[in-house]
Length: 475
Ligand code: SAM
Ligand code: SF4
Image (cartoon, rainbow, N blue to C red; front, side, top):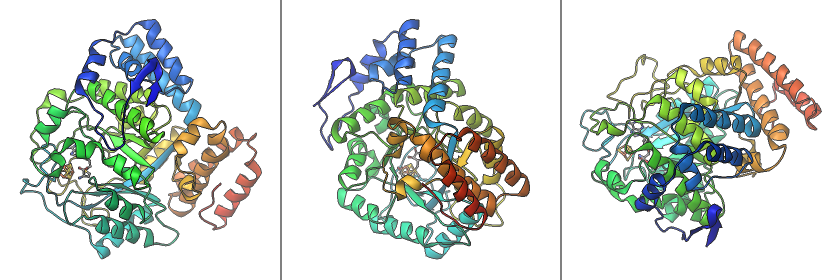
């Protein structure tokens, strides 16, 4: 039993369902925002305090445009204060789209006869990874449909194959997974392949809606999915990612569902999730959905800012489902990771004949298909540091987001230098001249800002060594 803010008693148990819809609805219906309370809650978050469900509900129920601006400003300040200006880049790599479920929002659903089904086996997978490495990627998330073909052993094998591909100076240093829930033994098999984060999105925390949109297959079992990441933790995967698919039910409910999930992890494992994702419904072939809960851009931006404030220590992922302009805007409110140069077609990265998105081959439509270099160039223009850092994970510093948050000076001492080192690698190996020049200008500027850093002398030496051809330099 753990006591939480407001003496709120939580009796969570490992691998036991923890969502009670009426509890969430009660909190939402009985929370009234007033100016001073909203400000008090924002400042609690800026003092690095994780918000309770009641406190989060106050922000969720805030509708006055001025106060919503203050929430967004708070999220911006929290990001600046704790995380600095780094943005970690990754790419999704779809491995297979066979699926035995019927999720009404997804193009891969079993009953969709128009989708072209494919699984990447060894040679095709290697080709995809080579292409991604030639673009400069170092971090991937492998994505799988839910199907008996994609067994834990199959997933583990594909992870090993990805790590084995070394193209020129390129290599993949961190492989994350987005795949079906497993039993504990299955998670162990996958963990042993050396994965980073295992992501599973609950899609909706509202049980009735969950049953309405998951029509058949294993995924229809709400509790099996809800407790999946507990089993992952039991199997020793201590980096797990949660998420909700916004647009299935009321976004306010889903935000509280996510916070409730965080509560659960803190209560039973004493550690929160590594990342939170907030995918928003996009068009998919054969999609069959009630559009009543589609989230508009204003509410979407607001909910990202609220999530940042509610769980200040966790990484937040914003994907290419969203259009470029909106992504640039939302980045400010606390996002720490984005995908770049994204292609979600099976085998799409290495397909030289592919020019346009083909909905017959994709799970859904993406709205930001800028090449990785364009994204990096624009991040640099806006004074962000594009980062491919994987240092913590490889130094055994798991839970780095928590350290970034909890250890004073951690970002300045380790994260920013490591981000600059991976940026320099990218500039040397993959960037066009114009981006390289801009990138080194940004590096110089950031070095000046880090002048007091105790690692500055070694950092400058390491940067020189990258220019001289050394790779994989980190603290
Ligand atoms: N099949 C596994 C599963 O369902 O968990 C693995 C990943 S699924 C391919 C990845 C995620 O894509 C889902 O969890 C869901 O949140 C999201 N997704 C599915 N259909 C979508 C759509 N039409 N628009 C946006 N995101 C979607
Ligand atoms: Fe299958 Fe996942 Fe799509 Fe559902 S969301 S149909 S489980 S691939």
